Length: 461
Image (tube, rainbow, N blue to C red; front, side, top):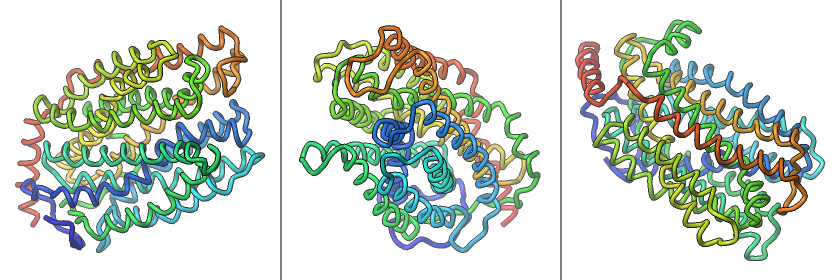
């Protein structure tokens, strides 16, 4: 299949064609602006609003956590709505189309027009709008990926492409402020505003191309039913429970890393803001290099085992990188690259595994609940980001202040910063491998499910 105009719908089958690289590239294009939001929310915006807009750290953490908790409530309703959507464009593409103007407006207000002195109410209101659009866009794309390739190994490939474009989006958006500063075009604040304009321009271009160039097959099955009971019933499944716990742990660990990165490298290691941004850039570039490795390993030993291996390696590499002494930019850069190699594994393998679990649910219930299931996964990811902001509430209690340089904080507050940045993420990453023990939905079991679904869908046809 080539990247030509997409048919409105077709019935997904186990022998669905292998999607071309052109189609997968077009499908993954929206990841560029969506990933920019994804890194800005836990990394750029908290630090930007604390140091440049002037919102106190404790209040900032409270606002982000409150909006996250409200946003978590959004997700099941959005997933519920997606599963009931029936249009000529498909089930998921209309939601991405609606999300586009919402996200463009939120980017304008959050990045571009905000001025020093904007209060918590301003942040709360526009953050809520941003999260609404972000949930619609990301859930729509994840559900679309699940039907784009129903086969076990091909899903790893689709979500692998998805993750590669996510990392490219992260790299591009992170490098913008540094380019602005280094080329003399403006200050770091100007770089953040340019970041917002880049997102605004990229959103309609990438989402529009995907909607035109990529098909959206439709699963056969009865209309969703059951209301809240159907949502709660999913938590009874061993497969779903393990995925959600793993996703929560893998959300908290890098979330803490992102939220404290500038403080850690500035206060503990003595690097400036630009150098810390470069370390983060190198870290994400390593994730881009490592993603194909974990996709390949998943086809050899299964997604669950590949993710467990990646999590253990991630824990070891991450802790090792944080213990490298400051003062040598080159050595720290190498350590951050090594630490970032396993970064992408959890992000795309968990979503491919949830798509597999969606097939299991469809076989057992006769109902396609893909949207609802990804909304649950999205909720745990966001809960992870909420918990990742807890250090913003803890650090002021021990006297830590958001200062640009390595001086001005007590030894005790800096020790707590190191514990939060090093030990907590390392333990959470290692715990993920333990959670995945006994994961029931293996490649063989999924092949059996797809065969049973094919037989039943043929009967429906």
